[in-house]
Length: 283
Image (cartoon, rainbow, N blue to C red; front, top):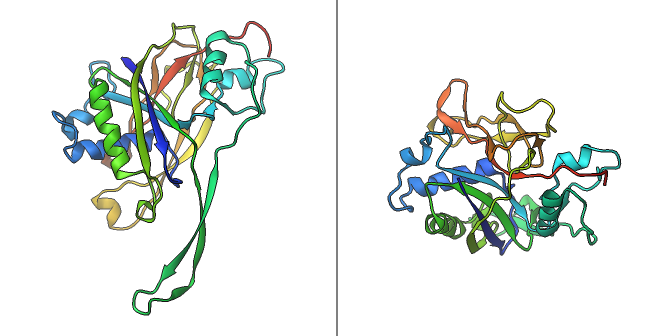
């Protein structure tokens, strides 16, 4: 599959995490709404002969906070267990060369506090207990690695431009999740090295090597369909998190799943990967 790098610029804080499962669902609604010429939702949800969706998306990472492969954090004596994220450029150097680059002091992702008040529409006054503070993230730029042989650069631009028009996540009506589209660019995937790192959340498959670095996290899932609207019901998925590393050359790992008793609902859990060079010596 061809590999692309999408760049987005947040112009306001966002509240919803940029997981690939959520992003894939948002893009699916854009396709369902008819904003991608030549595509319908059946084609979007279909599988290629290789058994994967026509488009695979990773998490959106702040350009200064790409997850360090677990292989480098846990795989050798003296590993940098304290360093969980690093900027995109030195991250590529680490993966390509297998040696730790010289890093500047890490820059935390900006977190913006906003105060809100709920108003009584009848009286025009503030409601009792209606004052609240919300904290959102607003990095300088977001990066998404995308794989596809079905959509070219123009098609991906249409999808992500529409995403920027709609905005991202919770409380968009209050000004959160506003985005500016920057670019989609085809990039060369480095040569296979025998190890990979996951660039998104994924549901593991039986063929993943046991000797990998299995990095787990919990993801809340809330289906939005007719059955869910009859009464809110949250689901909880245990997934591999970005940074999980395995001795394989697979260009993507994971699978989509159906919830038991919910065949009308499918949860995306496939992540693009990036080759990792095994360090020649301990960092």
